Amino acid sequence: MRQKRITAIMMASAMVFALMGCGSGSAGAISTEITQADPSFEYNGKTVSFTDDPQTVVEAIKSVAELADEVDGTESSGKTYDFDKNGENYNLSISTSADEGNEIIGSMLVNGGEFKTSKGIGIGSKAEEVEAAYGNPNERTKLKKEEIYAYRCDGYSFSFTIKGGQVKSILYSNSNFHG
Image (cartoon, rainbow, N blue to C red; front, top):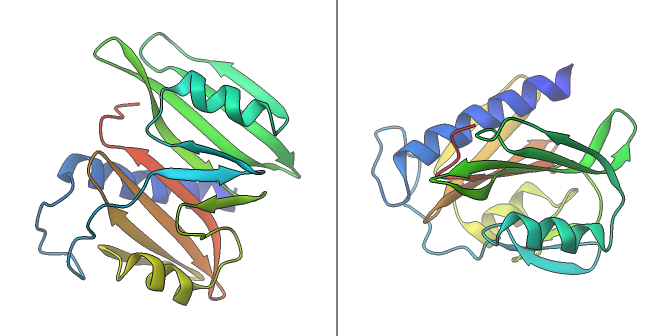
């Protein structure tokens, strides 16, 4: 239940960023906008990009991870792919959506596994390493025991949930995601 609450908050933050877009000023912004951040990531040794077409990403991940669940939504809501079940959670979940007739990755949630961003940040990385790699976040959201560092980029946003000074989850969200 707690993981669902955190996921919902992260998704809401990502949707706000998606509506604002990269480069938009905001009264709530804590720091300057980041420049370009490479949307590629590595999962279990396979490198792909969050902005690649969904089938390319899903097939690449399937080659190095166990597809634990695949849920078909409606034509407009897309699909959800869950990889590497870990207790009650999945290490990696990818949700797709239709955007003007094209399927896109709407969001990707990382809770574990051998995942690294293009700058080497993964589950267990220290908060200081996140800021050293990406700078000050565009927005910080403090919860009771966690803090969310959120960053906006051109076409997508990403955020890190920090607990006890370490990354506990990572969320990527497409600016065109409407699901």
